[in-house]
Amino acid sequence: MAREINLVPDIKGEMIKTLKLRNLIFFLCVIVAIASTVITILFGLIVGGQQLALTSKQDAIKSLSAKLNSYSDLNDFLTIKDQLSNISTIANNKQVLSRTFNTLSALLPTGADKITISELSVNLSGDQPTFSFDAQANAGQEPFIDYNVLDSFKKSMQYMRYDYGNYVDKSGNTIPAYCIIEHGDDGSLLSDSSRGLYAFWTIDEEGCNPTKASDTSDTDADPEKESDIKQTTKQDSYSYEEYNGKKVVRIWRTPQFSDWYKEKETEGKPYMSLDGVISNVEHFESACITYTGDNSQSSANPKWTESNESCHLIPADTDGIKISESSNGKGASDELVLRFSATISLAPEVYKFSNHHVIAIPPSGRRNVTDSYVQIQAMFGERAADCEEGDTSCNNKANEGEE
Image 1: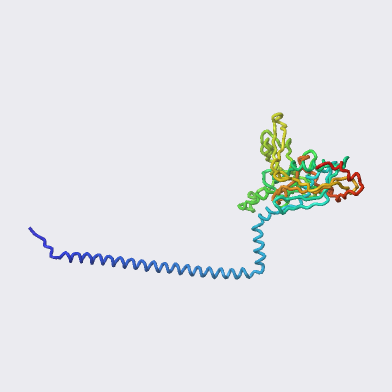
Image 2: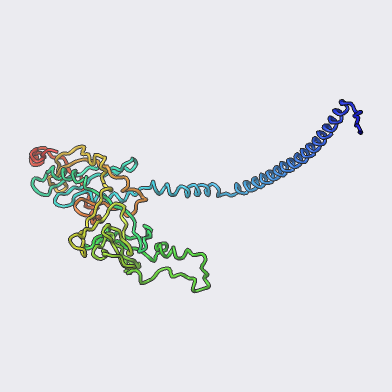
């Protein structure tokens, strides 16, 4: 039987294993060193390339900056650009002072009980616009100095309303405000004695037809192919009139209940539902007034009611009108009048430029249709004079009553 004899000492075997491990570690170190060198070179190339790119961009920016700063109109351009970016904010904050006269014509009584203003101050700077004025009240009958006129004027404040909104075409597209004529030559709102308020739409003016603007926005149409050209407006889809040399379409602001109401909607025909929704006809969309029909008595001729609970001309959370002083006086024609000074707070929405087609509504009727230039002139009059000493009719305390 053969026998193997190990002549290598144990220490020699351990040394051989250690040498093998050393060689392996050395080989791995060489591999890591090579990989690190490669990574370092790549990193250097990347950083160097980025630096070159940054330097190139900086040079380009400096060149463009120098070219930009060389323009003489740069400051004007930047100012205009800044204003254009704020144009919506400016429009929302803009106020329309001319609405004062429409509002006054609704506030002041003009019948036998008449109030005329001798001095007016309008303040639009606060959270709520205010009228401050000196005026005189004339009852028009005995006793001429009548506090009932002033008392009635004060109590009517809670019933004052206003209305605003947009005119729309048959498809419900908003018509730009500058395309609408609401006032006649004398400044009064256009109205029909039996059918209510209306306006004229200058449909053929540039930018005034929303449907036409929508139809011409197709960029894929080939102008060389007649089949690709869209018909922008059907000339027979609206009833045209002529007003002051312009081709216009009449739009009713007051709903035409008898003409528009139908039990069922028919395509292409004017329609108004019992809940006040109007379609297929050019009309006014009010932001304040809602209409409701009741056909319990007659399905063909419902009873219509309107409601305006949100748009108070004199905000409900204010004191309305404040009378600072009142006294007897003599008017321009030597008639007895009641002089007084007052301040009225108004809803800020009345003066907002962003609210279009604003009208004031007096308590005596659904609409204020008498705000003409003639009436505006009649709102103002000469300040009443103090009672002269010895004028018993003017100084008669029995005529004054109590406020």
